[in-house]
Image 1 (cartoon, rainbow, N blue to C red):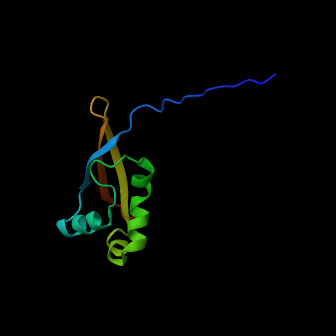
Image 2: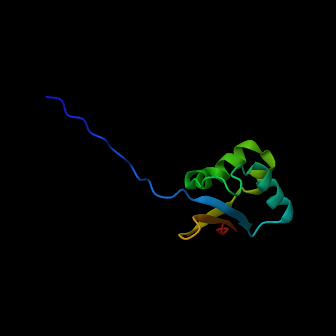
Amino acid sequence: PAVNYTVEIDSGPVYHLAFVKFENVSDELRSRLMRVWQMLPGDPFDESYVSHFVYKAQNEDPVLMRSLAGVKVTYNVLADQQTHEVNCVLHFTKAQQTP
């Protein structure tokens, strides 16, 4: 006997980037980061892109490598369940110097 199955997967709604913001950086550094940032507003949101962004940016731009040395980067992802848009904020903090 043969058995046939039909499988459907409902992965849920696709979330899209609404905006990205870089906090606690100079205007010059912000503009360098924006040149390297590839995910545009409206693109499907990929949190793994955000989590690997700084490492990738430092490897692509020697100025960013020097500028971000000793800087801790954290990020917040705020998803709107109504609009399925994501606001992403990356926070840059200078590491504490030990005496």
